[in-house]
Length: 210
Image (cartoon, rainbow, N blue to C red; front, side):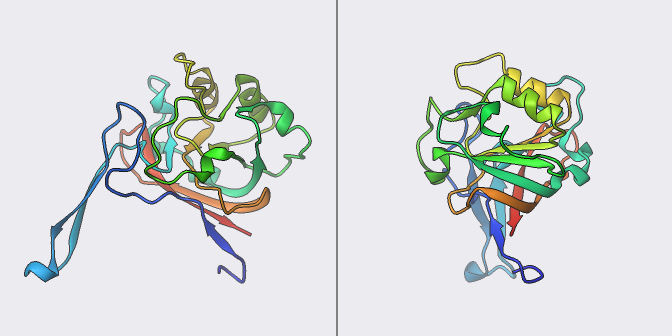
């Protein structure tokens, strides 16, 4: 609880061998020192790519010379978020037009992808947002967009127009959220990346507050 309000963690756990985007580095979590083996403290090492698990894309991910993850304005990453339930794998602006986005900083899309666990094999076809949806979000002042799969982009589109559209407007992209226990509606949110200088992305911890 936070100030009498419910806090919901919508971050996926980081575990060894978890599924990653094809071609990305695998994830390993290793104990390098153990009290049980005579060390004075337990020490753990994590090896992973910055787009593992629940993560944020910085503009640098697709915009040459764009801001790195350490340069993102943190004020964009907390505030009010609208969680929208998407039944179709093609997420377009028609899904969010019925909502009044005034005063809302972020939109998170909950799809069938939230029912996966960390080791569910990679899907070649998955829910993704359209370019027109991205444009609509930008026009309505949305600063952060989140989905519950590894990418907001259609898997068959290798030109990545949605990423480029959002990131060129410095809209933060959060991917691989775990929204299975979250109802559609309005929440407060906090989404904080690691301060990694020069990085195009970072794992994030994302909390919803109801």
